[in-house]
Length: 282
Image (cartoon, rainbow, N blue to C red; front, side, top):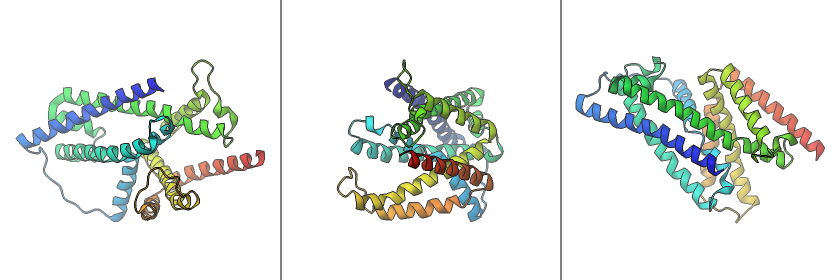
């Protein structure tokens, strides 16, 4: 666990540092030379905005993965909410500044295959573009490494408590890791990467997370009634925020296409069959 934490920390710094450099160089460049492209104004439909926001869900998601190993954190009832409330605004500011730099560097970034590298090339030439490209590569690798540590714990925990096939709870004799869950997760991840485009996978990831968020929001008022006094963190107006979260998630889910709907339907069907099998064996 400590090794995984250190690796995750190293990759976090490695992927944030190039972005911070890009933002600083870009803002200084614009202050001295001005924007190399003219500002464009345009109108977009509500449907276009919702589709864009749906992809933003993918960009801002991932914070829930930090909750998976929360039981191993010192004082999780205090540190986890504090970390999330600090991390989300920091990520939002970084995304905003990076977007400002890209939009003010490129005439039409949506038509560029690698907009970050292209913007870096405008601001600092090939050297800057290479640094940003390397940062993007490290960011992808770091994200996969962190997911390999966190996500297989879910299937491992399900199997350990009898809600998943027992082999998902298998522990490697030497490394003491849930190796079956890790291998299955890696194979599924590879298959999705090979069979789908980035945009399709990002949309599918965002929509699947929205359904998880809906379930979590719906559980809040129920748990407050059935388990009073057991909360370690209390958000004022939590029920209102939960209701708004459900409405917002369902609105964005309306942008789901037939391919995403089919993938989620297959997943839901497999989950339902697993639930029936677990109920019969109980």
